[in-house]
Length: 175
Image (tube, rainbow, N blue to C red; front, side):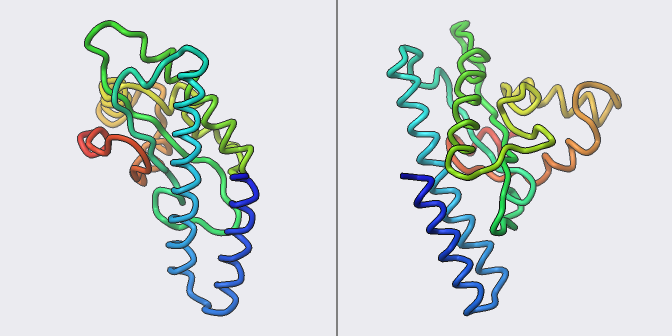
């Protein structure tokens, strides 16, 4: 159903653009539509994780858009450029495993409803684009201060476009 809704929304925005000729409004409409679809997908994945016995997210997290999604410049065709930042579990819970499974499910479901997978791998299904707030600080520090680590200079540029879509916005703001 979400795939069909997404397709109809794209067609509606395309018709709007042909009549109004406003790129800014098109970007705003795509943000509203695609954020709503993404939020619904993430909530469905949370429920799926519960049904599979994996439980609710063990800590707060934020799902953020990057690239054109983060800059609010999406057009008719989009791909996934996302990241997850999550809190550290104080009780020793293996949050990495939970969010690895969660991220894979979410990126698969987003693909199913028309969000193409990022050819460059900028998706939280890749470990590089998910982690605790401490993981993220270390990645950024290693690249920006010590010029080493898994992050490249282009990754830093992509990261600067981060915009929270769902979850605890404090995590992204703090980072």
